[in-house]
Amino acid sequence: MNIVIIGAGYVGLVSGACFSEFGFNVMCVDHNDNRIEDLNMGKIPIYEPGLDKLVEKNVLAKRLKFSVKLPENFRNIDAVFIAVGTPSILGKRKVELSYVFDAVKDIAKNINVDDNPILIVTKSTVPVGTSRKIEEVIQDFRPDLKPVKNFNIASNPEFLREGSAIEDFMRPDRVICGTESDSARTILQELYRPLNLRETPIIFTSIETAELIKYASNSFLATKITFINEIADICEKIGADVQQVAKGIGLDKRIGLKYLHPGPGFGGSCFPKDTRALVEIGKQIKTRIRIVESVILSNEERKLNMVKKIQKSVGDLSKKNIAILGITFKPNTDDMRDSPSLVIVPELVRLCNNVKIYDPVGMENARKMEQFKNVSWCTDTFACIRGTDAMVIITEWNEFRALDLNKVKSVLKNPLVIDLRNIYREEQMKSAGIRYISIGRGKIES
Ligand SMILES: NC(=O)c1ccc[n+]([C@@H]2O[C@H](COP(=O)([O-])OP(=O)(O)OC[C@H]3O[C@@H](n4cnc5c(N)ncnc54)[C@H](O)[C@@H]3O)[C@@H](O)[C@H]2O)c1
Figure 1 (cartoon, rainbow, N blue to C red):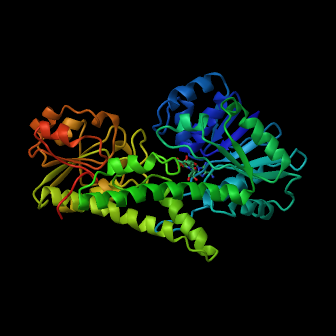
Figure 2 (spheres, rainbow, N blue to C red):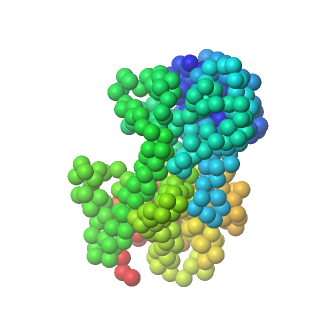
Figure 3 (cartoon, helix red, strand yellow):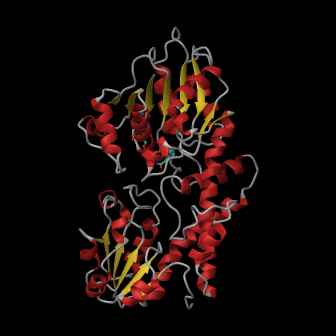
């Protein structure tokens, strides 16, 4: 099979590399010529473990190609996937769909009326109704094209997580395909057939159902995170241990252990924008989704509460130097979109004498961002924490998990560790002579 993927970002590039690994011929198209130039020279524009090797292997096998332009016709193409960004419109809950519709118009331009219908699959996360709108956009742009005769539409939302994207794509819990066309169904079944070996459920739904599943799924996970964060707040007031609470509730199979890790609030390119979008989808149809509205508010407040927590632990920050370990929204990605650090760091910069930062891969992207303009960048953990009044862990990168605590103590000016990811235990820190503050583990005096 031959497919085209528009958008060579976290989703498009990973999907393209994985589909080509399944044995299909894939062309990834991106309008960012620097990105395509890099890819054609073997340089991977994003950090995602294992992606470089997978891309290299499939490029060598001539199954994976990159281009700034769509093929001139789709005669030999079975499906065109849209995997472009759908960020929130700045300061609003609404989703920016212009990238999707631009991609759709590019596709429409190259559809030949005499060819078999081309399948257009939306992989981007788009509000309910967008795939139908795609049909309208095509017909407005090319009135000579007819649905079914010249093109079919499907929604195939992506659930991969940055940091484990290849594994998630190759071994997903399920694949969701929304379509009403039999030929689209046959093509999608064929494309995901390699997953049959693991008996991955492939669920066919209506287009609207598929679109909603993606938002409902992300909003549910964001709710779970926010729930345990609020339980952690209770733990700090009553002297309970949130890790044990999480285990105690999570072992109930109806609840499950995943996404019950307390922290500084959820971030990243999906949960914040997708929760906002679900609330907006509800608003458009006069159906409030109060749970998700509260989740958004709670999560916003949480990031600032983390600054208050640091302030309370360190005291007057005005003459203090703070070391931050990790700024990406989670480990194993360089994605800085909506990371909690984007709120925590500027607030600390405003309050402290100096904020020093080290992140294994996030610094290149962060350096370009306004929120980080007055920080001191460091080349490793110990250079970062040396001489500071507190070491704050925001992201749980593996390299922060087993630090030599005696060395940590010896280089810190003030032996205080504030661990916003609960990767250490109180006893370990105590025996190294370090004061340790974590999330929801034991009473914190207010
Ligand atoms: N990042 C994730 O973890 C993740 C997971 C699941 C779903 N999603 C969804 O997948 C979609 C893509 O997300 P992403 O993180 O890969 O975005 P991204 O910003 O990393 O990549 C998008 C790419 O699309 C390109 N692009 C934009 N408009 C284009 C056009 N008209 N023609 C050609 N190229 C174009 C951009 O240059 C960019 O390289 C979003 O809707 C997102 O919500 C993301």
